[in-house]
Every structure is written in C-alpha cells, then in structure tokens.
Amino acid sequence: HPELHARHILLLSVFFDADLGPRESTEIFLEIYGNNMLRKQTSAYLQSKVEELIRFLTNGEGVLSKLVDTSLLKFKQRDAIEKVLKSWREETECDMEAWREKRMRSYFEDRYDYRKNLIDWDYSMNIKGWAEIIHSKLYMWWRQEGIAYE
Image 1: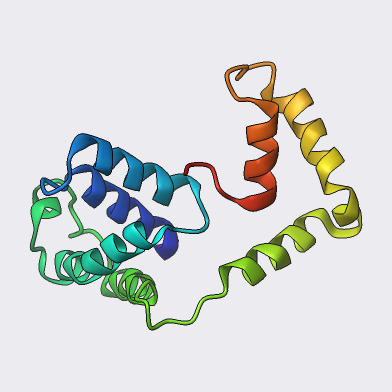
Image 2: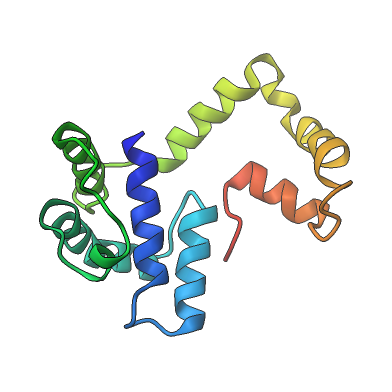
C-alpha cells in the first residue's frame, strides 16, 4: 500500500519538523490525518515537503533517515511510494469533492439519500458507548463533509 506508506512518512516528517512550533505542528498533523481537504497553509507546507520526502526515500537524506529504515523496501515499492509523493504536487489535478461524493455514493449505495440517518445510527450504536467525548453533531459533520479539524 504505497499511499499508506507515503502518508505515514509525511506524518512522521510533520512530527519531527524542527521548523514548526508545537501548536503549528499539531494543527498540520491533525489536519493531514483527519481531513480530506486542506487549508492553503497546510497545502503550501505539503508542497514544500514533497521534494524533501522524495530525497529521503530515494537518497536517504534528511531527519527521517535516522528514524525510518527503507533498506528492506524493493525498488518497485520505493518507486510506487515516490509516485504517490509526486502526485501530491499542486500541478496534479485533483477534484477531492467529486472523489468524496463518488466514494460516499459507492459506500451508501441505495441508502445514499438516507445517509444522515445512517450516520446517526453509526454514532448511536458504535461510537457513543466507548467515546462519549465525541459530540454527535461534530461526528455527523465529519462524516458528511470529511473535515475533522479546522
């Protein structure tokens, strides 16, 4: 799963970025981790990190080289991860709203028109019992919009 590996490398690089303060690092980490849409600031940060992450993956340069061992990855796997990292560049066309809509329709299928009720049922039956701190309206908003952190 190259997308998963690329995402984990990115999240580690955010966590260990010495140029970011604790609050800014946390905000960027949570936004990348929980949202399907990024703010302009986070998108700019991601753009500045893409080349650094590619250099880490291909040449073993950077802060992550001391933390992450990529020697067991095959060249085919590295190339797949690098392809994912390159797809994160701004010049790559990506209509996230349309992709999310398509995924939601695929997930809910015939029940798409009743997704609010289904999301409420998921919250009541699966989330509320073990995570009462999560408010139902925030959960509903996240499931419908894909934005967990602002």
